[in-house]
Image (cartoon, rainbow, N blue to C red; front, side, top):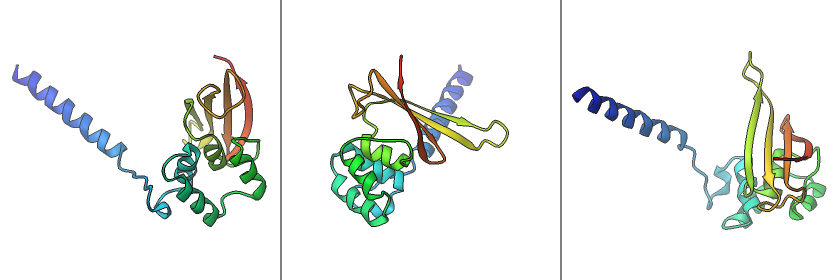
Length: 146
């Protein structure tokens, strides 16, 4: 019985410590300069609290061209835009899946894929939109069927 209790305590301790390690990165809604580019674009993409500050920081960092800004403001994307622009245009609301493809030998990221539900996001491709990212930019946009 003692062994079972020790095992449960060990599992609880290990489980709690691993959650803490995963949640150490903080996103600031008041000081945008502390955030990564992707975080700022995601904050802006939600169009909620902090989005005006995020927009100012995006402009300050010159993350998008004028043409990209026009598309982002309209909630539109196209191949060649950055992943940051995707997150600013769509946010993560309505993202139903995200996957990564890595080189098995080097563990280097090859591509990333986001799938958005058109009823829950700004995507206009239904029923779902798959956006493939390669080298930090939108490589492909296509209809994704369940």
